[in-house]
Length: 250
Image 1: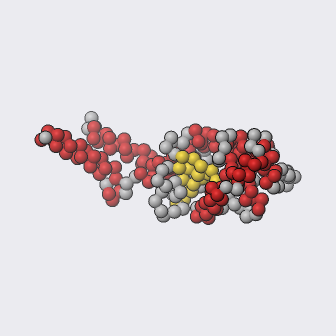
Image 2: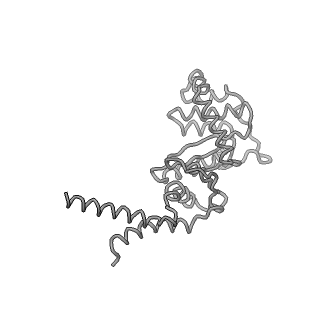
Image 3: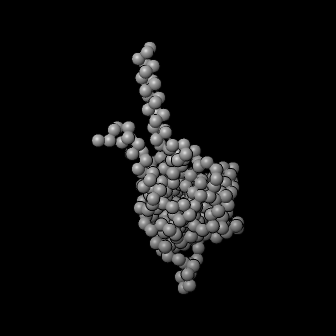
């Protein structure tokens, strides 16, 4: 029979070794920063309303991903600035506005559809030969027409779009796009430290498992040289013994 303390160590170590065997740095993920990870676990998706794979991800996969993330993981989305144009900036602003409103999912879908058409929801590439689709978004006024269908009038949209917080948000998105070396979308960044290599992921379950591992487990592992979980458990056990001894003496 395994002693209780040994069993506790086995339960702590087993999940880590299982994950380490499944996910390989350089294959399944890339470390993009030498800095400490974010203070709280988080997943950030970088995407573009112009990207057909992003629309497909948003419609068919992201709901399952978010539903199966570890409950401690915060989720956020950021729009890339690949266009580097006035219109591209207006489209970026539209996401910042969406994030200040209640019906985020419906508005996000509406922006995707206005630019790509509803067929883009299933990965249809309108940029392919013979599949050209004319975007309905060519100015801020066009964007405001999309929002008006959801009860957001022009004045409210302009106030949110031109706010200081929106300007700061766009500046952050651009800075992080460069910092995290986001060159294609959709892109998933975990804890501001790891980029998921989507090309190496074969199943949705594998993707979710990798995100949960990187966000919650990987940086929680103590270095082997420090004794890892065994040393931590030994210190906790020693502290409990000392506390019990102090109570008996008092």
